[in-house]
Length: 489
Image (cartoon, rainbow, N blue to C red; front, side):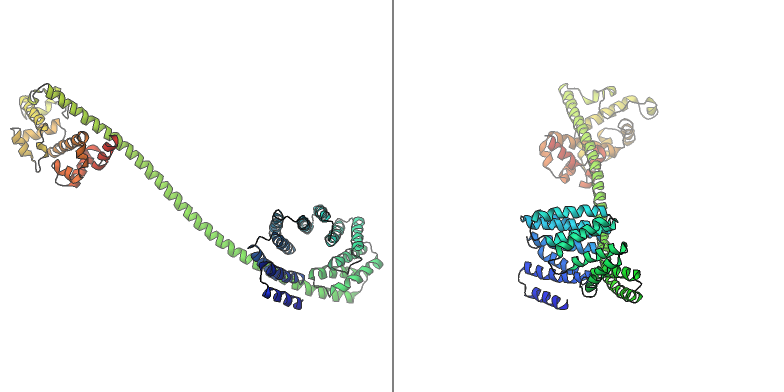
């Protein structure tokens, strides 16, 4: 075995192509499998898989997948075994050689039979053996070895079903097929199967014939699994023949063999689970990170949707308010035009006819303040003042406006508070904003001015002050109002 492994390693070292490297590594994998070192067998096969997957050689891919399916099945890692069986069958779909395809499919059906037999589903195992043979029969040549193994498997599964007649029939058919060839591990499995049948029938004479035959392989074969089943059968025979010495020796040999097999398989399985756990931890960490990212994205998306909805509501509200402002500005423009055409003096306009920002007179509020005639004159003066642009003067004060209206500040404040529902400064600010709205609405040139220029135009001390008052009076900022005006036109 060591010499064979050395040769395989040498072949790998001189291999120049992926195919040659794959072949030499698979030779090593097969040798390690025969010696029961499943860890190394699988390691070499996985390295071969890595090499061959970089090529388009589907034949060798299928062979490697099939080999790995067998190793994982022996280790009872059935999920991995099934995965590689499926991969082998998938690779067959891309292979044009019908002989190779049928051989591979036949071997995968054999693997399914082994799998079902391990799970004690013996009837299912027999079904897959028959399916396997259908594929081997299509090859029609060089399939004797595979057919021999199928007959051996049928003998084993019928034996497990306690159908000793059919079991014997298939074992004898296998012997007939193998008679012209040197004994191999399948031949010894057939001998072992027949020995067990005769032991069940208490036919020790016939049993001895086959026990003697399998003894040749018990200590020499590199197939450790074969040696293990032979030791089982030998012990049955020595128990029935009361050969305590040989029974004891065989048990010691089997215990030693099983301990080695168990260590190798358990070590590989432990390492596999350790690797799997590490992978799971890595996957779990990645999953958690993905979850955090997903949560952050959902949160960001939700915030964006909320902000968008808020923005849309705010925008709709602003557009609605904009339309109201423009409508009011147009109505005021029409009203002023009508008044100009009718040549009506603002001073002669009765209070009841006021249609701007005045409110109905509360007679109770005027008692003891000023005569009704004085109020009417003051209202007329304010109307006249509103038709000018004097309110755009910087540092405009209450005394200045009182002097303009030819009254005192007390009377003027009373009239503004009562009829305009504002104090002096808010009254002036309203006039200024209405003025600039009118200019922006009806004179597109004003929309080209900077906000600071507009602020100065209507008497505000700063751009910030103008913006704050504009928003207070209209509900929207000047820049948005101008933008909506431009879009409207």
